[in-house]
Structures are given as C-alpha cells and as structure tokens.
Image 1 (cartoon, rainbow, N blue to C red):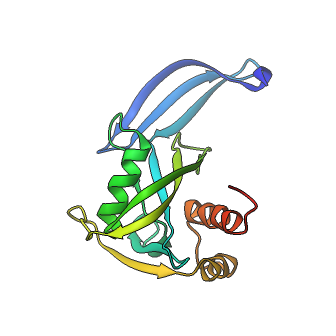
Image 2: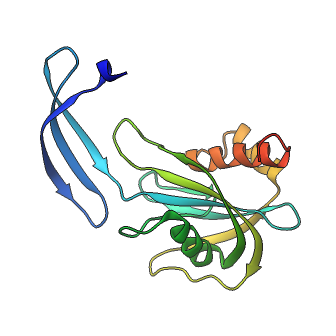
Length: 182
C-alpha cells in the first residue's frame, strides 16, 4: 500500500503540555500536492480486564473532563516514559482498583483515534486477583465496581458504555469466556 503513503517534508511542535504534544507536518500526498497534517503525540497506555474468580470483572466509574461525564470503564492508565505497558498495567491496576494480579495475558493493541493521534493502548487480561488496597494518584477520583460480563455487554448494547477501549475489552472478554478466543 506504499502508493497511499504521504511523505513528511517538515514537522514542528505547536503545543507541548504535561503529557500530550501537538505536531504539525507538511506532507506531500500521493497526488504530489502539499498538505498540512496536525496530530497529537501520546505516550501510549495500558488497559486491564480484571477478571475475578466469581466470573465478574472489576471496573471503575471515572469523570472525564473533556466530555464532562462520568464513564464506566475498565481500569487503564498512561505509560510512563519508556515504560513497558505490562508494567503500566500492573501499576495502574493496583493504583486504580487496589488489586494485584498474578496472571497476565496480553490480548491486543488498539489505536483508538487514528484520525488525530498516535495513541495506542495495549489490552491485558488480569486474573488471580488479590485485594491489596487502592493507591490513587493525587487528583484522581474513582469508584471501583464489580460487574457481571453479561451486564457489561447489555450496557454496551444500550449505549451506556461508550468508552471505546472498554467496549473493545468487553467484546474480547465475551469471546474469551465463550471459549472462542484464547
């Protein structure tokens, strides 16, 4: 598919925040014309599907300021500089939910917003959970909840769970629990 690629001619950073950066590139398109592309650089993240021995999953309610709404989500967090996402997943699971997992399985990588960001999220299944105690970061406010997988899918279907990473995680979990994916 090389014939669809654009050639970057120049790049400049037009915004640098605490952990997000906005880049502006001049590119030459496949048609030979010059275009401007703006996008957000993101350090990457990890999301966990914490599966309890009783078959339920651990989730969080969290307020997301950009859309000014509380969301039901699987726990997730931003990757620290050069950190492997399995380390991110273990750290964030404990911080956000208070659980540690002794069994981890990498599921997939998703790119949730390819139109304007390079963000990628690695999804993990976390099992053999042990409650240690929540260790929230300063300024982080979460409510931990336990949800049955079928209830989660029903909430997705009713449009009550709109967070894309959580929806994808719910579909992966359903396939795994059905024995269709391992």
